[in-house]
Image (cartoon, rainbow, N blue to C red; front, side, top):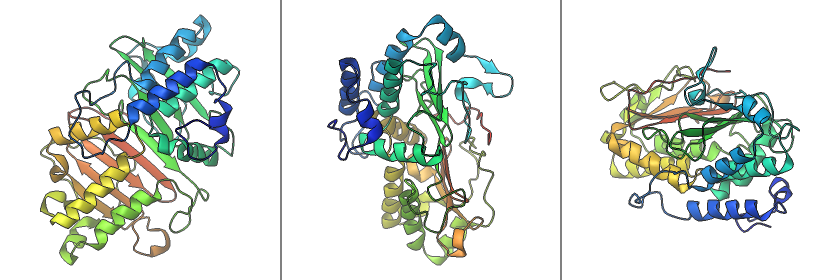
Length: 353
């Protein structure tokens, strides 16, 4: 068993016997993530670089590609798709950035193993098995990679490149900080339908639901007037995650007016939201947030619409700032849209499919 797993995971064990190169990449990922607290002071290198674990794996993967493979999955940095626009910035809840799936014969076994290292490299090791569960649940119990695709933009190893991996309920990126104004490589997406398309009350088995439970705890410690301000009847369209800017009047309850214990509870929500990601990405999110005023410039909003079971446990909620949107849409199952930057003028490029 690899040291960054506490329990056996079939997909992880599948690649455990791969060549030493990939074991080395996995060790970089573990070292890069480390155990730093979310609330530690920002480090000198608070963002991923071309030498980060996932980006190192992207370069290794790129170097193995044949001319035929590059023609299919590699694009210029600013490539525009006729339907999806600037392709490297697109995000949807269910899409394939290119046609070949990662487990198809389009890729060699060695390339598939490196792709698995890229996947692991962008996440906290404690979340590897959780994301593998999510992918199996949402891809008909198929092995890791069977429902995923990828693309490379620019040239890995230079100052302008981005790797994008997509599938149902997943869009993730590794760009070595090529775009210095965005966190997480750009807008990303996660989802999980753990108990079917129409999830049950309390979302049993959903890997993200504990985040909503923490958000609902914040709601319970608000006073009556605050709850009234925080709760809105109709939720926005789920793709409405573009930045509203510094001067926008955001809906919901401003965090700036919360009491100390309420702010601490919101900080716990934020820590939970960031927990799945590597330390470098968590740090970069926090730096983007801090640059535009931190949580005091954010609002927390809950939505009555889509309350599964009509039990007052709000399945749909949103934490939002001038250039920070974390939209948890929990009905009929969980979709999470994430868009974070330090520049609120950046455009959004999203759609449902």
